[in-house]
Length: 295
Image 1 (cartoon, one colour):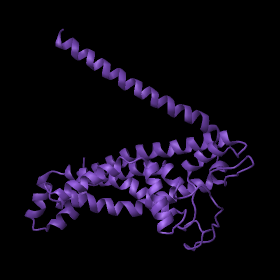
Image 2 (cartoon, rainbow, N blue to C red; image 1 turned 45 degrees about the vertical axis):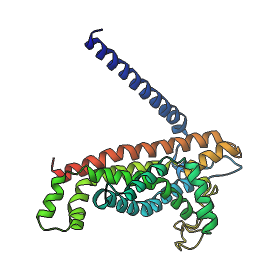
Image 3 (tube, rainbow, N blue to C red; image 1 turned 60 degrees about the vertical axis):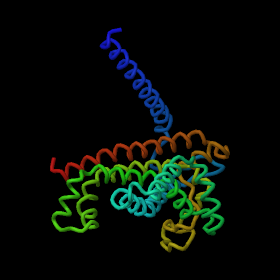
Image 4 (spheres, one colour; image 1 turned 90 degrees about the horizontal axis):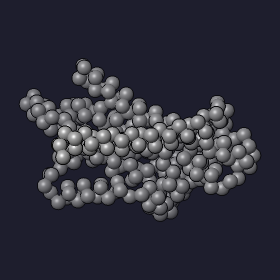
């Protein structure tokens, strides 16, 4: 057969497969948004949920999701940044220790989230005595998210051309100063993109939080800013049902009269936030890259 015809046929098959994937994804997103958007209102976004009566919202769950995301990133970002810098700039690439670390990262990144949740329950909830709380959920999500963020930081640093390192050393900078003032700023667009995408993954996580952050959303006293009080919105030692867990709970328990509407609206809000994270990652990455490169 003519090689050109074979190439056209293979290209057409790939286009068809890509089109099918896009159609499936678009159909799923449209289905969720069309069902959920009519139920979204300011009252729905700010009012607390109700267990046995209609008219509840997702205010506390939405706040819990955002607050848990912030705590998780505060814990996981410095760890992943340090690990990525070590693996990219300092580790002996031929050492068995480095290979062991990389293998461990690969294994952790492939673990199902429910396994991470059970691990978090046994270690953080039971052994450490944190109970069902935001800190337990954040630590479990750190275990869940750390491998991917570490790999993202490492790959972003490796993408920086070796002449940047040589230039920093030639100017008399130490190795650490070169990494801090030359390599990391150059890799910043990729790092930020990875962080934002990881945030979207954390925001939509449910399985790991069912066993760690809890399945209840107690009322919060917005005038209480004592971080040790369980009724304070900034306390990390209180239970915190997130938006994804709330969707699972509403569909699973069936105690909410308008559960279908609440679930549809909450799902649409969750999808919108995840889409914002994904598009925001591209936008922020391009902005930082154009600013640093003056292009």
